[in-house]
Amino acid sequence: MNFESAKSQLTKVLVTEEQIQSRVAEMAAEIDAKYEGKEVLLVGVLKGAIMFMADLSRALNISTSMDWMALSSYGSGTVSSGVIRILKDLDAEIHGKHVIIVEDIIDSGLTLSWLQATLTARGAASVDVVAFLRKPAAAKVEVPVWLVGYDIPNEFVVGYGLDYNERYRSLNCVAVLDPKVYS
Ligand code: IMP
Ligand code: MG
Image (cartoon, rainbow, N blue to C red):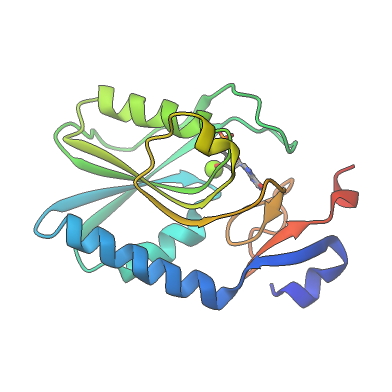
């Protein structure tokens, strides 16, 4: 879905389709350089990270495998609850593996710091965090993020995997949702 098709519910584009692709390529190059010669497990956080995972994994030249977790912290609203629940755990053991957590967006940072601690406690050889977007609140807490695609303002955004009540995930850019949709 493109911006034009959902224009009446969106206020502006924050990251275009072209910007997404060029930044993903840069991020992949950094990951390739750091992990050259290593086998990496990409852990995607469902469902928001699906588009980023699809693009990032294909842009990587190192050898990777993929696993997924589903966590709940948001429910259907637009404000982080801080309560994290595992809805779907990883399929395989991660002991001794080099793990890269692939996230759509860091807002409060609660989800990520919890997830990094959890995967480290399971005995991973290393756990890095890569997030496509980051909001300003994340800078205030201790979020162990290695790579960030774009820093964005504190607005509720949708597209490129990000939803509002399961809608707009297929939008091909990142856009600000018109507050009239949720207020
Ligand atoms: P955190 O624990 O507050 O960092 O929340 C992170 C999760 O909340 C993300 O992985 C998203 O799924 C969701 N989230 C945070 N901000 C937004 C947004 O602006 N739009 C859509 N989902 C968001
Ligand atoms: Mg998420």
